[in-house]
Image 1: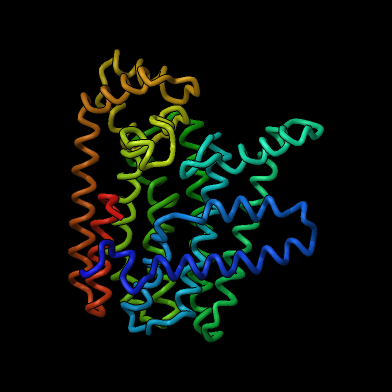
Image 2: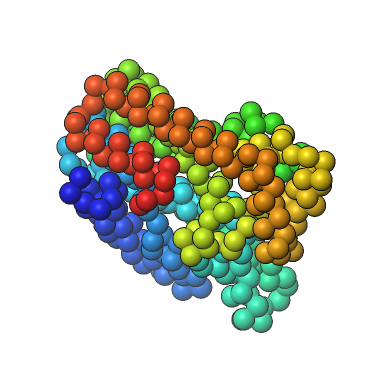
Length: 356
């Protein structure tokens, strides 16, 4: 391709940013008319969405284009609405995990706790922060729906897309609960961890955005099935890569402190694999370190060593490659627009290697 990233084909990333900013500008005016005191809610969303890879809108848009949809500003607006669903998921996820940062900035609940503390208001800053963040996440969920429904596409197209969108939201919330459950249980098998991967991340990151774009374009069921064969293994590989970065990633790239997933006690496929192959001493190190909010860098380094020594890192890397291969084979077998095939191929490599 003639551009540095498949996300930038047809200036998609920039156009999604313009659509999001325009929507936010209109919402700011509406909130200001309610009360200027609610504008910090807008600021939190605006800052969170000021960057980002725009990955979900890209898969939605190219699902549309692959089904024969035109280069349409209305379809792009529909795709851009997924940024607000993503914002909702991130904000609520940070509350549940007690995360301090997101994309290099204070997470929403920490941001509002600081606002409370700095204003010397009554009550607990932490409780205020959590409450405000939940409301901001809910607001993003509402805005996602509003942006999709007002995208300008014909009613029949929106009705088809809304059915997919409703399923996607239900799957996402169910996946989030399964993630909480795994942490409460103290982790389980790789099969249980993969179930969380599928519903918390894989489907709403890639498969369902593809389906949304295809449904908006009126694609037949066979096309959606082909997109599933491509998108679901790719979504799983994407999340497995995210799990590796959560332990081994550079904070400058991930926007979160080194080893934050370990402090939060995330029961990932990576951790499940390490646990299954750990010696008693290694199991003890995992048990003591995982979920310890005070885990220092030495503790992070010890758990990293366990993950490497048990072969969990290499096993997960191999699984990513297997899933990527399965995804690309499915894409190559599809009857799909040639330009969309090229971009979706590029997105598959970018998503699993994070070269975006």
